[in-house]
Amino acid sequence: MFFSNIPFFGAAVLAAFGIVLTAFGNRSIQQTRYFRVHGTRHDARVTSVSVLKNDEGRKSYWPTFQFTDADGRKVNKPTNMADTSFDFEIGSTHAFLDLTHATAVVVADRKTDDTLGIALSAGGVVCLGIGLIGMIP
Image 1 (cartoon, helix red, strand yellow):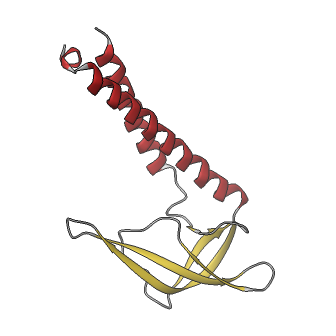
Image 2 (cartoon, one colour):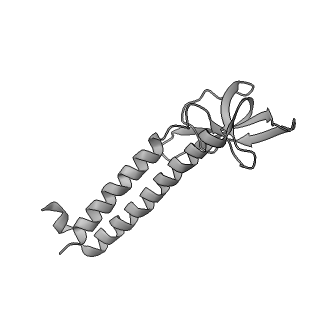
């Protein structure tokens, strides 16, 4: 069998990576669900956009929004995750979810699904399974 050819140390590292990946996936799912349940929906104006480039030349956009909170104060908060699609022109308006004491907001209807968390968790479970099978002598 293919998995029996994995060295024990490699299998242990793969299993540990699987545990970490699953933990991040579960944390992502919990966070987005918490924003959906407890967050307040706002429409806000984009005040700035940071561009993050990776080694392959792909870009991710990290907008900062300005909105009026429940207490009537003007607040500026960035999103909690960069986005690869560019529709965050300065001055444009977007819906998002905010928590009163959070340092960032979640763009509504886009980052509030569990797809990323489920994908991370599934990948982690696969890595963990392969690692555990590889550790069996």
